[in-house]
Length: 92
Image 1 (tube, rainbow, N blue to C red):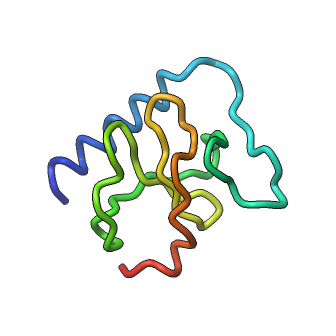
Image 2 (image 1 turned 120 degrees about the vertical axis):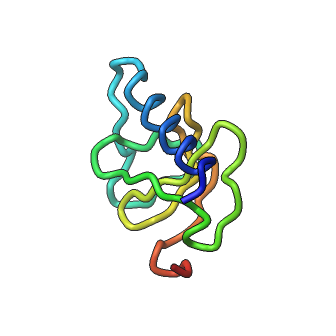
Image 3 (image 1 turned 180 degrees about the vertical axis):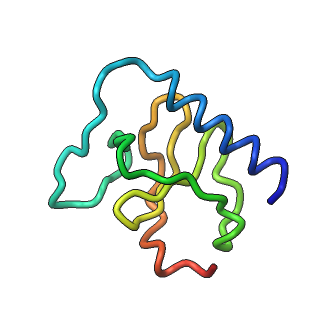
């Protein structure tokens, strides 16, 4: 694992724990998250995009998996920036 990815995951964890106390809930469990939706803390897993053939997520962003779908998430707001797609469709 590269240092950049370790630092990105560390920054993601710090940002997630430093968030305000307001609840972040899935807006409609019947559908996948979309850009602008907040990713709930429960059930999300940060991943290293390079392990799946993805480039850098962007500045102040990280890749997360939620409900088996990969998203690019803003580290400060935990909002979805981009929907990548099902993790099963990515190379590992």
